[in-house]
Structures are given as C-alpha cells and as structure tokens.
Image (cartoon, rainbow, N blue to C red; front, side, top):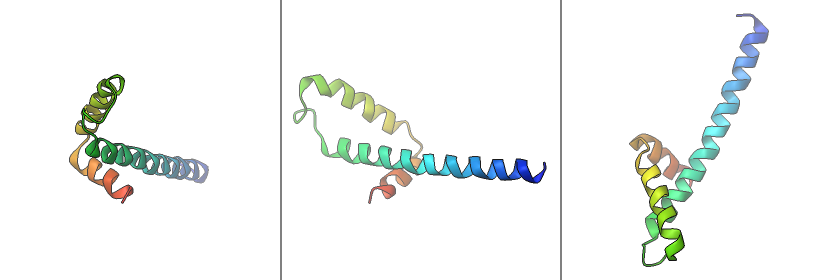
Length: 73
C-alpha cells in the first residue's frame, strides 16, 4: 500500500467510527425509550412498531447494547 492508500483507508476508518458513534446514540436512545414504555402507555398503532424495535434491540450483542446505553448517559 502506498501513502495515498493508507491515508484513504484511515479516512474511511474515521468515517466509520463516527457513523458507529451516531448509531450507538440512536440505539441507546431507542433502548431507553423502550425501557420506559409499556404497551398500555402506547397507542395501539404504535405497539407493533415498538415490539419490532424491542426485538431489534434485543438482537444486539450485549457489549454493543451496553456501548449504546453508555453513549446516551
């Protein structure tokens, strides 16, 4: 790899790390919101979407979910 390739790779890694941080913020905020919500609190039209979000959050690896929660604290 030449210096230009190394520079481009470094920029790409930095961009991906920034994107990860933003996604962790989104996932963390969603997890906090779902953690505080109950089906009785939500309109019927929202319950199914909240369940989908809950399943997606539960599918995350434990360390990723912890990072997400830490990102919003």
